[in-house]
Amino acid sequence: MKKYEIILQDLERKIFDDSYPVNEMLPSENELAEQYEASRSTVRQALKILEENGLIQRRHGLGSIVISHEKLLFPISGLTSYKELQASMGFTSETEVIIFGELEVTAELAKITGFPENELALHILRRRKVDGKFSILDRDFFLKREAGMLDINHAKASTYEYLEGVLGLDIAYAKKEITIDFASEEDFDLLDLNPSDRHVVSVKSHVYLADNTLFQYTESRHQVDRFRFTEFARRQKR
Image (cartoon, rainbow, N blue to C red; front, side, top):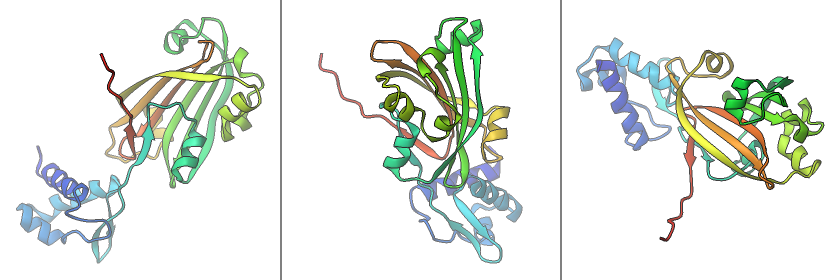
């Protein structure tokens, strides 16, 4: 491990365990260089990555201050729309629709979504700005025959408000898969990832109606250091 990585990991640990609390200054570059027996340029490299990861803000002539690093709490066990999450958690967000179109389900897409081949589907790609940064990329496929007149305005506001409130669909449950994936070229193009980011959190969901009809497939890709994913688990009695 390189020297700047050792310094980076130690400073990250001290920030997260509140040895360096939010709104307090880190030691100066000279002090850190002496503490870690390293050059100022090596210390500066570690501080640069800390800043890119949203843990500190460097102020010219003043030093580095620790900034708030709380992660948004995303539940994974429930089936909740993004708008409902935003309302319940109280974070500021904007949605931009990148793609809204209709396509025929190919053999390759059928394997991914579980939809019947040759069915018509709606393809929606949205990115979500959370507290000023594009941090989430949502790709959805809906069976066209179940989606009614779902349009781009619904996609920008809330697809579930239209599907449940207007069409009366009974959205019942989802099967989810969570993985840590390498960040793709599309992720870097559409999300405000840090230059040092190499991974994103991917949440893939197959969503079913109450009659067991699979009507939606979605993949949400999240900036890895912006969110915490939680699940409530109850022990099953045997």
